[in-house]
Image 1 (cartoon, rainbow, N blue to C red):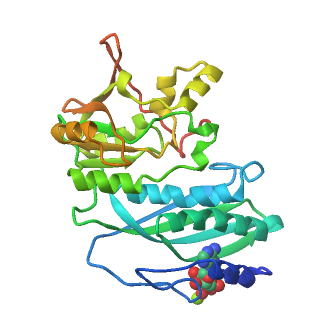
Image 2: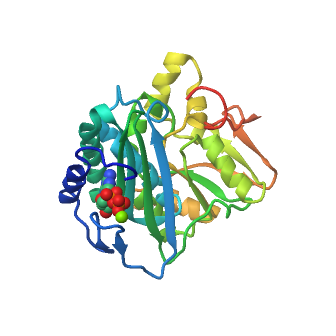
Image 3: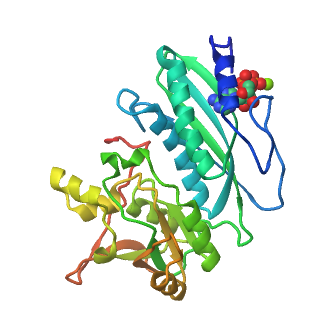
Length: 316
Ligand code: ADP
Ligand code: MG
């Protein structure tokens, strides 16, 4: 912590330390100037994500446990999106002074339950308090499997596009408790070489757009009928009158994976999905740039990539 330690900071760190077991790769966790992890020859994956009160959650409405869960989950989702194995996490918090200890403990409880379920060690962090709003930043380290990490850049014309689950309407509440698709990515990548992979944080259209762009300016056709629509998207559609498919294409924070692979491999995975990794085939990569939605009437219409962008004005 920078500057004078806030009262109780060290008690709080001692409290975290007592509740944080380490195993595996970790030789030293919370308590020293750095954590010590045993290095492995595999490619090391590193990702970080910051959540801010008023932007990604609202502390006056959301539970600290949910906020802690989400802060780690979004990082685990990024490791999943490389088909990696998460290993360790560090967490930095700027706590609102008036609720510092209560909020910190709640965050830790939500986070540690998820960390244990994914066998990720919480190996360190930084604890600050101030008169500003809650900010929480988590960094996760992971490693690639022998098949290597899966980038956004490997899609090829003719490849199939799969989704690991239904999309849309996550803002009704489930955005706080996303299920990181770590095991799903690993089993799929083990069964077939994945060409490109991304987790859907900004909306399918926008995130698939990243794959198309990074893969050299390709396009895609999505089949409207085969896109799995979450019940929350139907509820939101009834509330706001926008078609549910719009929510499925453009709502963010689903954290399902968008998987691109050879069409033969896709057929095989769809026909006999590996245990616990249901996949839906939703479209095809094309050499011609642009994103198209094929309707049930057989007519294609262009899809605008209008997912959430933090640097652009607008709601969110
Ligand atoms: P330093 O001043 O050397 O950076 P700190 O007093 O900030 O040390 O932290 C002491 C120990 O507690 C370190 O191991 C640090 O990683 C850990 N730590 C601090 N805050 C947190 C937190 N919020 N969650 C987990 N570990 C933490
Ligand atoms: Mg130090």
